[in-house]
Length: 206
Image (cartoon, rainbow, N blue to C red):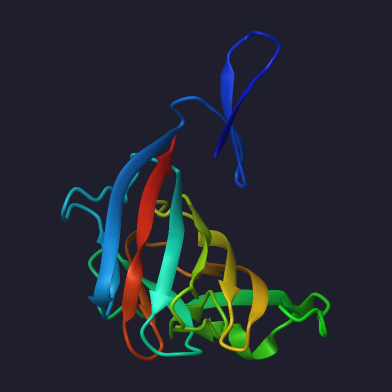
């Protein structure tokens, strides 16, 4: 995140999420993986806030390294009072890729096998991330007004990963939890194996 001074009238934070005033993006919690099967953010547990304190929340992913080569990461949620991380979602998934040898660069394309249509499984937010020493992925997930009891819960995400076949892969995911119950728990996990290393941070937007 960069700080830019505007016309001597103050400083604003400028990031991939847009421009917000100083103090508007509030750090809540960081979870650090260490051969972790799951990383879960549960409102009211271990200083996590995921309620009507903020209408927008952002999760950032830093140097997420899978234990299994070529594996995918996903997320799911629980509504208030729920369990099992199996809320109903409808989603979309686009991606584009370019390899290290510069011999192949794919166009932006829809990944039909990575979306959900009223599905209850984990939504993928990466493709086939490698687990070589320097391979990892990063990005963000933006969740809108999860405590609403009137509307469904929208989200958008973008991730950048090094695939197991040495491709740079940029993925774009969006959708909604089709529930009017408040969402107060979010969990991340690999489809196979563990999250070997990396940090996931949660922020609230005032």
